[in-house]
Length: 252
Image: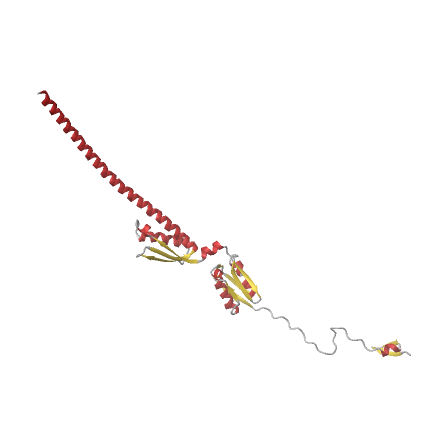
């Protein structure tokens, strides 16, 4: 027996089994009359302007924190003082601003993102770190000050420090003739060269003084020799005269 199905004005003949078959289950993902919750769109990363007038890596990270709020950034001590160029950033994310630090520091820092946290490490060579790390050095100046005034020596030291950078602290302890300086490795190297040179100058002056003393001693000895020679000559003349008188007496 056939049934008649009417769909939108169309007449379709169907066998008995078609009418009795259950409706097929909806395909996965198709609407079944139950409203499904939609997936929320991801929240975009906040953006901000960053104004940095130049300074150190630590100051740059602080500027980013000022623009975005406190940043989860750890700056290694050896990286904190590395120079960073000035920059003006418009509408950037925190991630972009932080990773730009490596370029602004001329590749001398490495920025390592760890989720929302950033590690700022030094990427300088050990020699670069030594030249830029502040240290304290002490020099004894007894030998130098034996042949020159303290003002003369300290003037040479100050001139070297001015050429090697700013920020060095200089102390001279007159009672012990100690020169004490706190500065970068580059500044300490410059002062070391000056002190070595001052010691050479002092040694040369000491040698000149010794030679002058030796010259005076030599002149004194020469005068003594001349006096002795005169005495010997006088003795010879006296002896000759005595012999001459003796011969004359024998002839008589």
